[in-house]
Image (tube, rainbow over all chains, first blue to last red; front, side, top):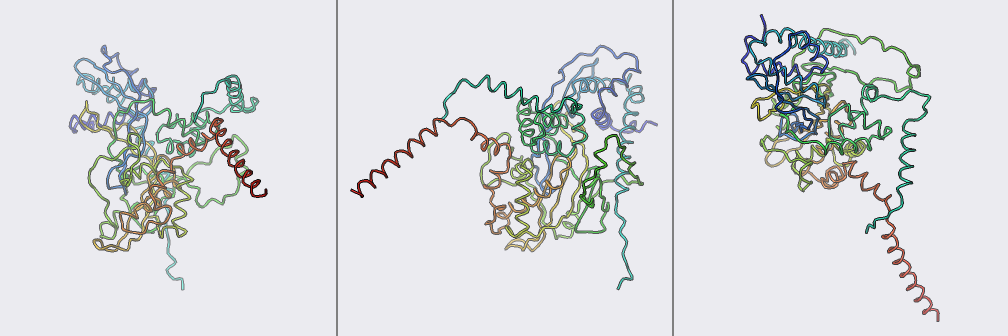
Length: 152
Length: 361
């Protein structure tokens, strides 16, 4: 069973948008290439690079403060009756365009399942594998303390 | 007084051409790519992102290449570039207990949830030059792996706060001030101070933090926790109305635990100094946390006579881009100012000589 079947539409969309944001333009293009051509898309907002002010919290859990900015690229695309949005880290316009197009297409019930199988699920698995590999490297550097109980 | 002077164009253009040549160095050697700098000079990239106050690894690496490795010049280039971009908004505050950790250590608890994870650290290396690195083409040995629990790791300060021994941080919910929009004013609220320190010069923060340890500020800090890793940044675009994750950034967080002797309204307890920086920057995060705690002296009713406790002094001098601008502007022509100083000095001398002559006669 597709694990996203049981999620609310908004949560499911948040999940695929997070996966799209972490993929490269090449990965998104390769995922799309295996599918039949998508219907005609209309660019509502051409890819545009700007800044998002990243915030932290004083002491980790207190009042918000402005840590510094990061580059972000956004794009909006209409596909039929669906509008796809992308806000992704960095300055890659091609990636933002593909992410917005895929966000629109994934909202279309006729395209959703095929796109999940061909694009989102493999990318999500690859991203999870990368995270897991890093976690295993970190785990290998965890200190196992031993106490010299009989030392006098 | 500044007067427009013409006539340097040819010399400037020749100087810039030579700069380009020296940047490239010996053409018999391969040119560095921006990607190589980004990957292999990663900590320099992190520092430029922090002091340039703009997270973009490629741009920071490009700036380092352009600046011939001068990291303050590189941070300056990055700060200048960011002014060309529109602001889309602010992120939700990072929830650092959800970081994916590469490194997490505590100097206050040996055994704690999540454990002591060393990560890729210089600590415990012998600081002996490794001549093996001079031989290129050597492959790094495989990194060991161990089974991992990928759950969230709670912050150390929360353990103490639950016991009532750690002062809770203020939670007013106010919109934080932003130094990129409004200039500093005093007294500066803590969020503004933290923004200033987060992009402050690492050397300046380090020296001030060190001074608090050596007795200028009476600090007795413990590293409650340092964590290094990655975290997803979330924003809520108005056209969507819900939060979305736009990708990961690297960050380093430091929680310094400091004794506070209490006041009329508060019992003796621990207080926090806080450091949070882009990329992997432990020294920077620790120094920031020491100085943050120093600057909290006023609100905690402590003495404010040490340099690291004087917020005007600290906050006005922490920014290396402002500092370098003002120091280096002294190189620009001051011909007319100097002429007037010269004239002034000659007048004083003449008057003094005339007086001496009169006295002698």
